[in-house]
Length: 116
Image (tube, rainbow, N blue to C red; front, side, top):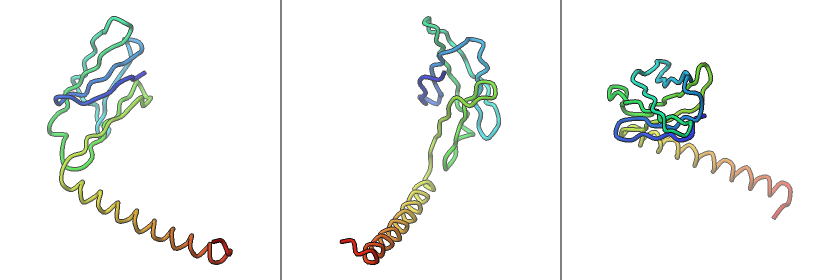
């Protein structure tokens, strides 16, 4: 089981509580990343560490999936760049528009049912 996960100093780090022969892999866009290391912590757990290749980091959201064999046991995302700011603003505008529609529909419902 994946207990803790973080990105620090260009490396993904995690604690794995499970067998030392687990087939852990980190994938980005379906491709397995190389360089994953395991270090025993002495309490039946393993410290995992993987350098993140700089060429994978670009504007937008980059999602990494952690798998044990064929089972997904975790994931993490790295968000970078100015285009993301525009994406968030557009998403907020859509949410505001949807909220306005809901408010109008609710008010109409209150008028039609006589609720005050």
